Image (cartoon, rainbow, N blue to C red; front, side):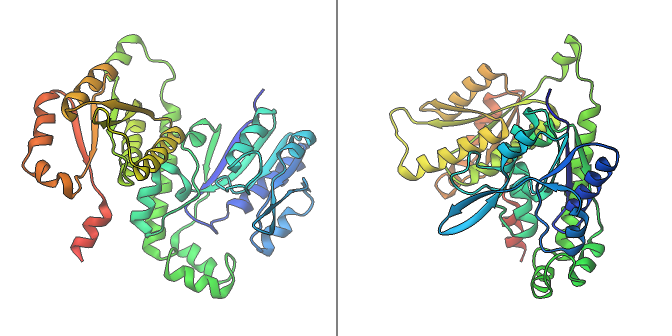
Length: 362
C-alpha cells in the first residue's frame, strides 16, 4: 500500500514550512509512530536545528559534481530503514548528476511506493504551471520546478501562511538569512509587493486544490457529456510557446478537461537545430504537465487545426501573439479571422506576455 503524502506549501522561504514539518514529526513520534528525517535542510537556522534534535536522521548519500562533494537523500537507505513516516524537505530540489533520480519529488515517489508515509515542503514559485506568472510578478525565472500532478496526487496539501509584514520582520531579525543577505533579499525578491502577490497565488492554489477535492469523483453520463471540454494549444518551436502551454494547462485544470498541444509544420520541412532544441523543451514541459503533444503536417495552418479540432474534440484553442514575421498577416485579420470563421463554436484565446504590457506602460 502506498504511503500517505502530506505537502506543506508556502509563499516563500522563511514562512516556517520546515519548522512545521519537524513539529509534526515530533508530534507523530510522541504518539508512538516510527519517524525519521529522510532529508533536512536547516539553512543554518538555530531554531530549526534544535527542533530536529531527538529525531533519527537517515545518513545521506554523498555524490561528487564538478570537484565538489554534495549530499543528497539516500532513497535506498530510507526504504531499507522502512519507518512509518519520513520527513523530506525541499520537494523541488534537483539532485546531483549521477544519482538515480533527477529530482527529489521522484525520490519521494519511490519512498511512498514502498509504503512509507511522507511529509514534505515546497514553495509555490516552484510549481511548473506558475513559472511564467512568477516571472511576471517578481522578475525572477525559477529554474527548479516540479509537476503540478504532485499536488494533485498528494493526500493532503496544507498551507503554511505568514503575512508579508511578518516574513519581512523575520528577515530583518536574521531568522531566515544572514543579515547581509537578508538586506539584499528585502530589496529584491522579498519586496512587499512580491510577497503579497506570492501569497495571493498560494492562497488561490490551495483553495483550488480544496475545491477540486470536493468535486464528485463520478459524474453520470449526462452530466459528463454536458461539461465535456478539451483544450488545444497551438505552439511553434520558440521559447514563448512554453508560456502558451502553461497558460492553457491551467485553464484546462479549471475546466477539468484534457489538453493537447500541436505544432503544425510544412510538409517536408525539417526543424533547424535551434528549433529541434525548442521542440525538445516543449515536449519535456508537456510531459511534466501531462499534456498530449502532437506534431502535424499541413500546408494550411487553419485547415490543419480544424482537422485536429475535429479529431480531438477540442472546444478551446490557445494561440500566442504573433512575431514580427507574422504580425502583418495577423493584424490584417487573415489568420484569426479565418480561425473564427472556419472553427465555429470554438473559443479562441490569444496568450500575451504580461511583462511586455508593463514595459510599454513605463
